[in-house]
Image (tube, rainbow, N blue to C red; front, side, top):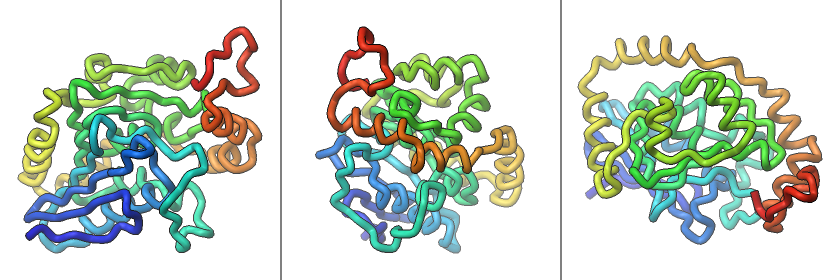
Length: 265
């Protein structure tokens, strides 16, 4: 029987079978939008897989046609975690934990992969993506200055494309994402999990200590994350409150010129 673990939220399922652990994002009622508890639960899954004495890889995936669209912006969270009361952004989100994981982490991207979902996939060792997957960096249209993306995205796609994706918030399909280097593998939709397992096993065949040194060198290509600006944008800026409020109310934010307002962005 696979080993299971409680990640602190009913919307994440964790099981380990041999050398593969699987974390499944499962909140279909909100299209897998990530609550704070879910973000922290993914972080716990990475920590857990790194605690095993046996070499183990973690695969992160979603349900239905959604990997993860990013954070919950409507203020709805059915899974409050009292241990997170005094935590802020960087303490909760899993991106750095995924980036620095000694154990291999694979993103099995089964569909929509936006915002924090895309950051999770980008920080994974390999992202195996469905041909149906879409990718988007919508933070600026929500009023959020996501300094994680400002630091990480140019290393994947170059400054020009990063600027394009961040400033416009446009949606990129799987074919374009592969072409620009945002992700590395696109497979038929029904083969995502099998190919993700194959990628995990390929990485597990490499020497762990040597792999760690190479990963460290590779991730040094990322820029500095300006945490102060990011936290100000999230918790002090009126733009973020307006942007998230507009999303919840299915309207354009107030800063959008009146003749360009088209409903939820």
